[in-house]
Image: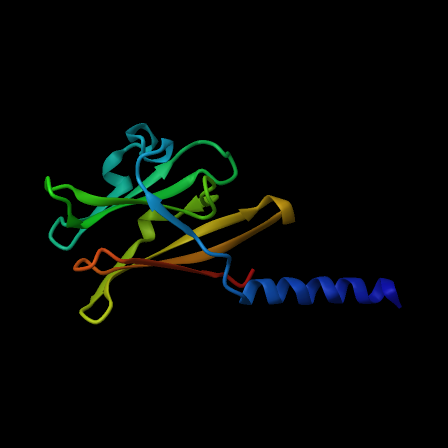
Amino acid sequence: MTRRLAPLLLGAALCLAATMPARAQELSDCGDFRTDARNIPEPWEASTRTFANGEVRLVLLDTIEPAAAPYHLMILSPPYDEVGGRQCKVLSRDGRSGWAGVQFDLLEAGYDPATGLTLTLPAMIWLPEKNFVNSTLLTITLNQSTGEIGVTQQLGNE
């Protein structure tokens, strides 16, 4: 009986994991190794996009390590500081680990005055402790007036 239940329990656990949101992402100030210009994949034109008349820039970063999760995102946006620089944030999946892949070419943007700029793009996560790979959809909301950035990710149904 136990042998027959194990595959069913595993299948149920995987279905549950696929419907639950992935753990929180980490948004932090720029300034460490992740935001080094050499981490912008070539050609740079394919790894950066601007929005809101050039006020907001999203940049794909590839830190090479950790090899299974090297992709991060850098967000430059208002508000501006006292010398005219935009805020700079780096988005990672978990600390210094990013995503296993980011489909930057599928980036979509929209604007709603009530919520601000919304950016969505597909990515892949890898959880080494669980030997788990799954697609996810990242959603980034940005309020240019306050500088507040919200991030959610929704796992795919693999």
